[in-house]
Image (tube, rainbow, N blue to C red; front, side, top):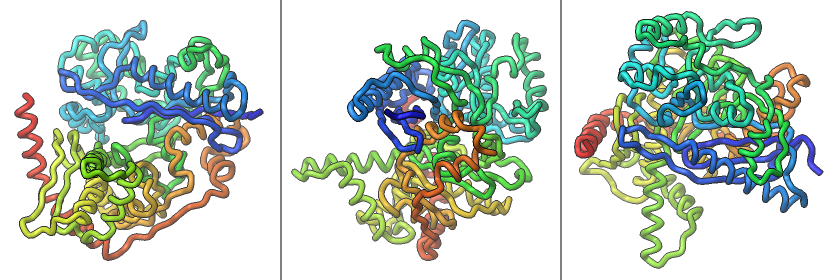
Length: 532
């Protein structure tokens, strides 16, 4: 009989995953469900909420089935639960919690006007994917539904509400909806009061019947009481009726927050890189930035510490597409190569490529990329006439492309602010193959990188850690102490230092990459014009 069971669920860009852990944070059982975003006729990247619920149910059912198989009894009680999802975006509801507009994800880059105006108004960088940018853009567009908004939340916040009946989100997730006040009120974090007052002036001038604080969810720090699983919530998770109500819920978080927890990166001078469908780096700051940067989000850790985030919309999607093509070619040639074999071969070939990519340039932009000023995307591979077009250079160029936009943002931040980080912890699909992706990120960013033995567990495991912290918060002075002493005290870690020759080669690649952005922009414009 297992006690102290914790369930972490994360709705990622391509997969919904659930993990059930024991008292020692070991995974007892897990489940998953694949899903994909779609592009609406209005031009928004979205997921249907009905698909989100169906996916959560299927991931949970797989977890429950595996638990029954291993433990020999049904999964009827879970001590604590945490919900995570892709960050931010836009989910507006009326007073009856009826959805007013399609869920607009982080991938949308149609909020440039709102982002720029709010950044100027607040003197604080407001990224295009933040909830407040989406709301203001809808106001600027004179969208009818904005008058009827009673609740504005995120995908994680919505599912948390469905399980508990409470409108609340974790501090890290909240910080990507609207800026957080640097000063707490009665020991609790609140939305920035000065910026809220400025935005309320906009709402008043538009004649809208609410203030921004009225529609945003309550902010909770890691470990705080975020409600409990209601009978309706239990049936939503487990339509068979086996799961009992009463589980404690921790504050929901975005995938950035779960990544920080899963890599023990919540103290100043720590940081992590998450690389999958998108790629982002999180650096916990020792002091505030001197000024706002368009390519840097100011968010927080799950317990409210200021964090600089460089987020890029695309990472491994194009690399994955090319590997699928190679797999199709191998099948046509009568070869039998598994998906794992294809990825291993691809990464190994990249290691022997020229340090600067040999004159090949790859742009992995499926969508717009604010860090480089690209408004819409079109994957593009090009090369110099004298380039050496061979498989190693091709593979290295695709891997370089996966981290190039992040490197641009990080180098600006390091140069202008002198931010120091001791080690970047790496997790996500780019690092599943041992050492290769880790080494390239170390060289690209010129910083030591590390991968823990638990890195493959990912976001849902990080969410289960936060759920466990909810159960035992009183035992520790902080989230950092809990992670250091209870979770990662004996963790095995592989560290990699930058390779000077590879770092110099990547810099040469990045220089040509930035010069070639004009071609990427032109390609994206051509395909956008054809679509229109």
